[in-house]
Length: 83
Image (cartoon, rainbow, N blue to C red; front, side):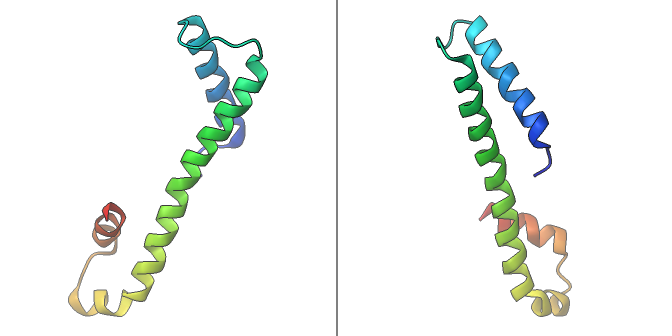
């Protein structure tokens, strides 16, 4: 993950604070809301990590073919990730 868990917690607190201030959400338990928003952010960011790992595994399987054809690893990474 590119962000620390402390920073994600900070983002969740700020997001919750702004949503409450804008009256977009109403809660009697802001701490519980912060925990849920933090968990959601971590899950979303972890998804990106899982996708990247799957792409790496796929490209490792085709590494020899890529070398033979002269394909660029970064370019292939982007193409496979989009799929």
